[in-house]
Length: 178
Image 1 (tube, rainbow, N blue to C red):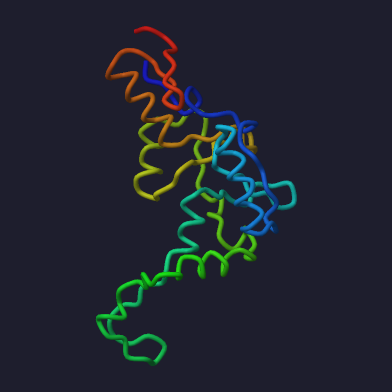
Image 2: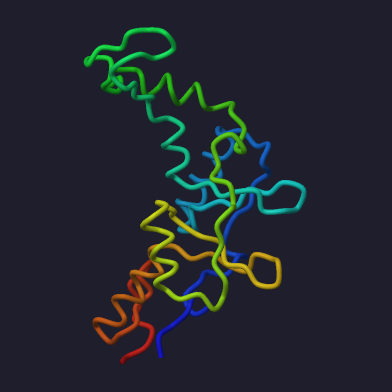
């Protein structure tokens, strides 16, 4: 029988939480510590003891990514083709990093508005990643978050199906022989 989201999810206790009012600068310190200790680099953003959003590398990188103007008119200004390419000037990365450092996490997080249930299929989880570009999706049971599922867990199950051996994709340890 095919596994469900419940079978591959990571328990919620494994994910660090941060207040929605934290600065991006503070959060980068939390992410660095999580990466150095081998923990999950997806953060749960909490507001009033409720999951407000999710913050991962993707959301932080999107906040730094330069705005690309479409050729034509922008705010009354004529935009030529050469201005429609993002700015890749030396020093611009540092400038953008400093620019977002004091933003609150709530301004850059992905709102927690898509969820999976314990009984959902892995195809539904895969669809959430592919169509929405999510790095992780919360799993709910009885109105509360109980875990998260990301592409790594789905890829791990794909490898298990195709090789008939289950591996923990994160550390390569053999779990069960097929």
